[in-house]
Amino acid sequence: MTELAPRLEINGLVRAFGGRPVVDGVSLSVAAGQVTCLLGPSGCGKSTTLRMIAGVERADAGTVTIDGRPMAGPGLHLPPESRGVGLMFQDFALFPHLTVAQNVAFGLSGDKAARQFRVEELLERVNLTGFGPKHPHQLSGGEQQRVALARALAPRPRVMLMDEPFSGLDNRLRDGIRDVTLDILKEEGAAVVLVTHEPDEAMRMADEIALMRGGRIVQKGAPYNVYNAPVDKAAAAFFSDINVIRGTSRGALTETPFGDFLTPGHADGAPVDIVIRPQHLKIDFDRGGRGPNPTPQDGTPARGTVLRARYLGRESLVEFRMDFDGSRLVASVPGVFLPRPGMALWLMIRRDRCFVFGVK
Image (cartoon, rainbow, N blue to C red; front, side, top):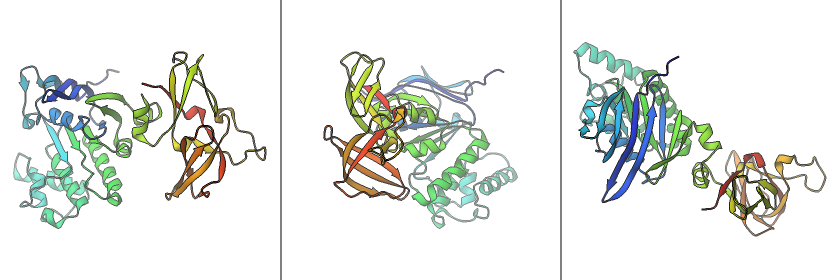
């Protein structure tokens, strides 16, 4: 079966301000119906990348192609209205003097009956049937966001560009509106590029995550792969809290208080960081032979002293000072587990859940 060409393709996009590169060689391919998230901290270049795709910002170098048609490149820069893109932003940007129906119909052409049918169709799909005569100030934040979505989708854009569109909503509404938005975007078949700085949002919505740092994409892949096979320590830390154990690789092994770890590919004598997330740090309640022995993947138990414990609802976080070097490690324990400060406990770490990175 012949693979379909990407709906959106960008190659080598570059943008600098005052001689400082903000976007430095970004490339992406997004198929119809695919959601790709540009994920990264503030200032990493993700919003500038989005604006270059839209045509709002002119690239210094690189190309933008939609459905095989060049939109930007050497000597070429089509304006946003000629690119067939839909735009959604954090502030919704609804026209306050227009009704909901007039906002949704704003970018539509054709006869009145066809425009009205499209408006009513979209308002039904975003669960706002009957809201057409209202004005934006009469709506909640979640309702305004759905109107903005309907307006962006009304002209049937080939590419939908979304810049932090849910950040203005409270947590109670956010997840439900994300799900509604994702379902509609998939049905419409647009290629979607979503900018966010929230890993949870990217994991929830994306088919592919492009993790950005310093104007470049440092890792790209399906959410499962990016989370479970981070390219470096900073990538692992962006998705969750991490614990770091420093060691030295000798003969492809690194000795730690939790046992030896395989560290192939690292030079003899090279420092390495063994990284593990708090949920994979296990408390050995059966230390001392009172229960089953740890499995090989759990390694050797090491003792630590509880510094503090906090209950977070679905889990408890317990912070330890380790006996072997005074370092601090944090364990995430399901449910309520609040040992008192000063209590000594034995810990194990899941070898199969650790990442090993060279120290730069």
